[in-house]
Length: 334
Image (cartoon, rainbow, N blue to C red; front, side, top):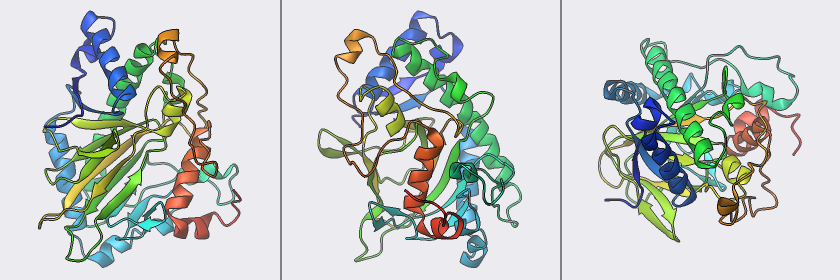
């Protein structure tokens, strides 16, 4: 059905030191070295929580446009809120999707906070007419944080590191981010770009998607469909792990093609990010893995990968949301 491996993390969650747990760590490392994507099952998040989240997402997108637009992302220096169709861009082209961006519930810093990436923290915006949406979303995010830490610990073992090699960036808290996304069914004559070809900027991404297709991953120069599997999350890597491992791990390019039928596509992307203060230097790979590293720096000299997560995250946000940049980051200089 797909060239993306399906990996069961349950044995690792039960006992990372067991033979089965270590086998999962090695399998996950190989998936992240190869296609850069994997389906993760056995994660312990009850399927009912996924369905509740997808239902909340559909309820949100069914609200009148003027109610959604009250939550405009331009209101938030932390890039939390609603983005209307076509207002986010990838590689300079408009993405045909709308979305609600959410993060941890945090107090907003002073408007002139320095360094600038401190402004990426702040409160979320929620629709007043959907009072159950906030607890549903935040509960699901808590479950995915636990999964993210398990997966990152498995990668640490697979890379020949101590199991807690990456923990310091995430404990006791981290700066995770969530996108609740709708890709409308494509109208005749409409370009097919739901979201353009890109690779992710952080560490790990987990994707929950409905049965409407559209996600495609670039493998060996061709785009491969990645359909939904009930009970599985799709996991992929960001450029900071690629850089930290000198390219042994892959931040694989991917895209979403707008649905060609009558149904909209709903997906939720959970970005398992460390604290903005976290700095990710090089991982000292075992010799056998080092021989297979292919270089991890971005080939575009105008798009450097910063080792400090806050700097890297801000770079992407400002590029994707120029309206937020104009309102809240007029003092930014590249």
